[in-house]
Image (cartoon, rainbow, N blue to C red):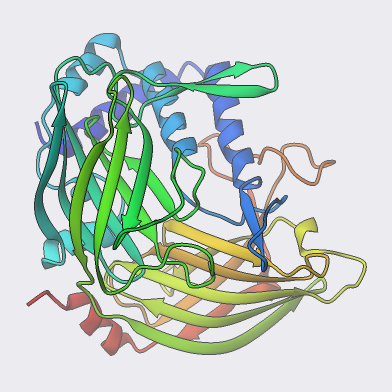
Length: 402
């Protein structure tokens, strides 16, 4: 069976079940995921973490993985779920995720193949491939063995009073620790670290992990062009972590376009300062200021999209926002997106306000349509369109590793 056949089966089964309505458990979990977008870690310039009503970090990690796990358990029969666990990993993990940049990296020969693995108690973990473009490092993780009880990223959140507890099946990843040239980075405990995220794939025994090189994160991850990465992965039910050493080297060029384009709306001044392109990732850097002394930027929930001139919208990879300490009146934003399918002539930054399920509140769950998509109010006054060097970008996109 081809890997994408698995996705088709899941979609087909899910649509049949959706025809009978969305179960309350799924709707509740969906609301929790949307609400979490507006309640992720925020940093001030001192590096002190805060909670904010705005969605400032866009890591795709445990919340999404948990949501997918719940959806799968609701829509896939026990027989089919058991069959999926036994399907071997076919081809590249980078071809099994909805990420055009990683798929392109595989096709262009930008991926570094590896033969790194570790074995304990009848379970083998391996890292078959990695790619690094200077902005994000993407690492495939594969699991094999007997006695595995669920997917590699599977877990269930159990509510215990005012707190929740995660329950993992045997063989699921519970923790990852990393070192760059021997220096430890912040631990990643299924969603706690904005710079590191885990994504499920169409194979339950394969996962994708990404490290983001955020220039605004002064106290965060710093990855040079070439380094040694030490990975410690803990699995549920296994006493000791799996330890692997990975050589990492940047395999792509990049184009940086400095800018100073400013727009204003309702006392908010937005300045687009930089566009950055690699064959894998698109990055934007902007500054946002609140000019109304009676308001703070955290009073508004603003989200961002990147479009080309043909109306194609990029998928979000991650991001970081850093407030100033003067009552949250200024913020620096760094957002990362997927690459474009082809080199565009222009790039448009669109800003929108998601509609809240309860309009009387300043934060909470977002309202969605019948397809589960966010209901958005676009702010045309803050929209910025930038012409780009299409020929230069096309050359970058078509470049292959020599």
